[in-house]
Image (tube, rainbow, N blue to C red; front, top):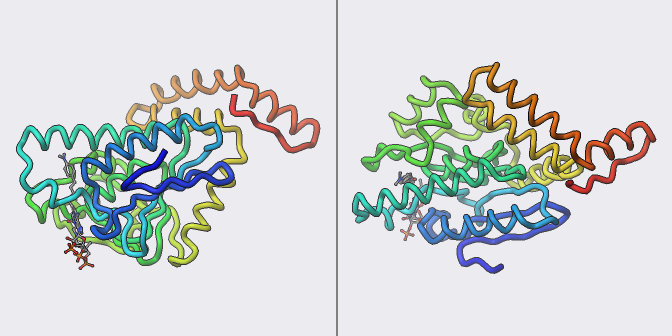
Length: 260
Ligand code: DAK
């Protein structure tokens, strides 16, 4: 389907989903979040999609945050609805049954960094700038930033970024563990696609189950997490892909995964 504030292209099992409001550095307004929910439903359902890449249109920005012009005059009731919409959208990304890679091509600020943190992992351009400047606007990171960021990089480092509102460059974000890999801007998308292609060759159900297992156990103790892993892992043996993957190994051929 067509979108106003998004571009969705699917090729070789990979969905490239671009936030497309470059005039405002891809800031997230209500309409864009609603479209994002639609697009996430679409890529979840499409059998020709195995991996999703989320990025921003234009050379300057991934997402420069929630749309400040739209937020400025919100009432608390509207802010609550906006917050719920944001949380629901980021939850859809985090729990999508397919991997979502963030390709951070420029500014990832506020809600923009929070949306990247909801993805499975982040690759960034050398030009990227990341941060959570909400306190400079009289609010604080409200799309899960006070939860996902400390879990990823530790409480002290997250608090420093959140309290100062300072941006870090891609190299520093890499050192902090926010970003997995950094590339020159002109290579970013191709490198993300290479990784996406590698993932897309693997058993889709196994990749999806692995994502579910990591997510389900992430906020639990090791024993509870292992109990979840045991159950999900055993369910792999109910799939065609497990029989095909192991059969292909023993017959010394490439597996033909069906995603079932
Ligand atoms: N919202 C709306 N417009 C934005 C924007 C944003 N976040 N960021 C940039 N723009 C617009 C600018 O207003 C400008 O518009 P025009 O003046 O051309 O009409 C255009 O994009 C180009 O921006 P600049 O002229 O400022 O470009 P520069 O290169 O000079 O600066 C910049 C780039 C990224 C450093 C600067 O634009 C900037 O500081 N932008 C704001 C970044 C920011 O503060 N982001 C955090 C937003 S707050 C919630 C939960 C979470 C959130 C909200 C609610 N609930 C729980 C309810 C999240 C909040 C945020 O994300």
